[in-house]
Length: 209
Image 1 (spheres, one colour):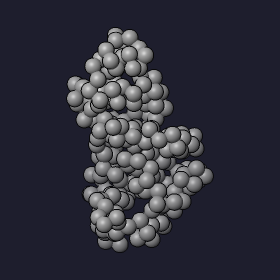
Image 2 (image 1 turned 90 degrees about the vertical axis):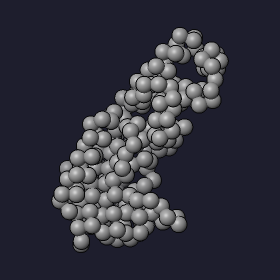
Image 3 (image 1 turned 180 degrees about the horizontal axis):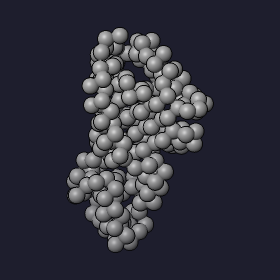
């Protein structure tokens, strides 16, 4: 296989890389949601749950937590040994196999998504470095989920998006004005935002709005 191969669609990707997944002992994945790679590798979740010695790390955007079914699937993966983290930062949808192969998701054109399979050591090392930066800047799934739920983050974001005044938003959520403002400040901190506008922008980028 060439150092860089571009394929069209999940079927071709699976045909070319199934043997690489079957032999992998370390899988690192960054994705916006659970759908980018699931069609291409339907056997991967089962394999992650059953093969001993397989190290799995996954980084997702917070939007996955809004769908109860997806959130439960993440918890199941974590229960079977996968390490999962959540990030609000923009990520490149990528899979890394044994630090030797990188698969980068491209744009969807005409309903078919392109994927680039890379085996060039220098390129893979650069992509691995980007993943490691995203991984170390992300938050453990359980911790993020607990904090997100505790703050009522979704409800607060909806109030901010609607343009409601603080007093109106606080009444709608059944909390005091002081509590509402404190939660807004804590949510901004969780999103790494210095202003409400930036918090809204990052929430949209992360699929929360």
